[in-house]
Amino acid sequence: MSYLSDIEIAHRCQMKPITEIAEKAGIEEKYIEQYGRYKAKIDLSIMEENNRPNGKLIFVTAITPTPAGEGKTTTTIGLADGLSRIGKNVTVALREPSLGPVFGIKGGAAGGGYAQVVPMEDINLHFTGDFHAIGAANNLLAAMLDNHIKQGNELGIDVRRITWKRCVDMNDRQLRNIVDGLGGVANGVPREDGFDITVANEIMAVLCLSEGITDLKERLSRIIVGYTYDDKPVTCAELKAAGAMAALLKDALKPNLVQTLEGTPALVHGGPFANIAHGCNSVTATRLAMRLSDYAVTEAGFGADLGAEKFLDIKCRAAGLTPAAVVMVATVRALKMHGGLDKKSLDTEDIAALEKGIPNLLRHIHNIKNVYGLPCVVAINRFPTDTDNEIDFIIKKCRELGVNTVLSTVWADGGKGGEELAREVVRLCEEEKADFKFSYPLDCGIEGKIEAIVKRVYGGSGITVLPAAKKQIEKLTALGFAGLPVCIAKTQYSFSDNPALLGAPEGFTVTVRDLKACAGAGFIVAYTGAVMTMPGLPKSPAAERIDVDSEGNITGLF
Image (cartoon, rainbow, N blue to C red; front, side):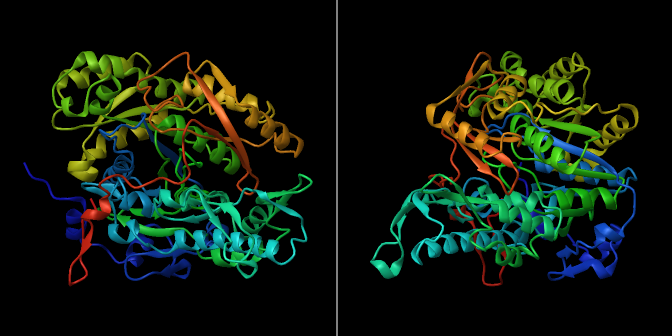
C-alpha cells in the first residue's frame, strides 16, 4: 500500500489565512506581524494586556528514541487537534526545526502524516529567520571577542582559554575544530577555534528562557566567553556586545504563529536539542499558549530522560510552570528494538522481545509519576504491523503502574485518531492532581545534582568525574555558580552515556568529562560520553533527495 508523503499531504491542505487563525486563538489584529499569508509573529505586549486566566499545560514526552521512530511531535500535534475536535479550546507550542537535521537524517520536523504544522516547507527551512538571527548574534559576539584581542586585548583574555565558539545551523563536522586568524598581523591573532550547531549554542537557550527584552539583555550580558591570564571570567558585558546582540534578536524573541492541518493555532518558537542543550521551545511561546487557551500542549526533545528532565528541572523551575498532565509516547516497534530486535525484524509479533524492551517505557513512567509527581498517560503510536497481543501486553504492564494506555492513530487519521487520547488527557487534568517535585534541590552542589539525575532519572549507580571536570566543578563553585541547575549533555539513545546500552540498563556509571557555565542561560552544562555539539551529515543525507521544480514547488521534505 502506498502512502502520500508528508509534503504531499501538506500541499493538499487548504490553509486558512493567518489572520483567521489569530482570531480563533483570541489574538487581536494589533498584536499580529504578518510574514506573508500563513505566518505571523505575535507582539510580546499581548502578555501584559491579555488578562485571561492561564490554561492547563499538557506536556508530551517519549521513550528513549530508536531508529524505529516514536512520533512525539506528530502525537503532540494530533493531540492538539484531538482536543479541538472534542470541543476544547487549545493551542499547541512546538520547537522550530533545525536545518542541519532537516538536510541530514530527519528530512523535516514539522510532524508527520495527517498531524502536521503548516506551511511545512517554510517551517522546516528559513521560517521567519529566528535561527539566522540567533546565529548572527552568536557570531557578532565571536567577532567582537577576536577584535578585542586584535586591538590590544585590554581585558587580558587568554587566547588558549576562549570558550565561546562560532555557530552555523548545519551539520558540518569539518568545522568542529579549526584554526583561524592566519595570514599575518592584519588578519587577527591565530588561535584554535570551532563551530557549534546553532541549536546547541547558548544564545538559543537565552532566547528560549528569556521573559522579555530586558531579561534578554541581562542574560546576554552574563554570558562568559573565556578567561583572562589571571583566571578571571570575561563576559559579554565587558565586551560591550549585549546591546547590539539584543537588537539582532529583537524580532526573534516574538513567538511565531502558524496552524495545524486542521486549523488549530500553533506557536512554533525556539529549538534547542535536548541531548546537548535544554531541549524545549521558548518560555514565551509556552506561556502565551497557556494564556490563549484552556489547554496548552507542548513537548521537549528526545526521550524523557533528556527532554522531560530538562523541561521540568530547568524550564519549569525557571518559569514557574507546572504541567497538569504528561503524555508518554511509545511504539511497539521501538520497544522491541530495546528488547534486542533488529530493525528488519520488527514487523513480526515478538512478545519475548517486547518483554525485554518494555522496562524502558516503565522506567520513564516511573520517573514522571514518582520522581516528578505528575499524572501520566501512555500514547501508543500504532503501526499496521502491531498485533493485539503486543498492544494488550503493554496495556497490562502500564496498568500495573497505575497508568492508562491509549492507542493513537494521528499519523493516519489526524485529530480523529487523537480523540481518545484527548479525552484521557482531559480526565487526568480534571480527576488527578499533580504533586510536582524536582529531581534535585538547587543547594546540593554541582556534583550532587548530576549524581541525583543519574541515580533518580537514568537509573544508574553513580558518576565518575574525570580530573579535568573535577577542576571545573571547583572553579565554577568558586565563581558562585553552584546554585544553578545542571544541563547534562548525553547520548539520546540510552539512559546511560553509552548509546549501545538499550532498554533500561542498571548498575552503570556516567562519566563526566567536562563542564561549562552557561551563565546567560542560567545553567551548568555537564558533558558526558562522546556527545558532540556539532553533528555531521550521514553517508546519504536527506539533502540528496530534496529539490525544487521550475514552479518553485519543493519536494523531498519527508
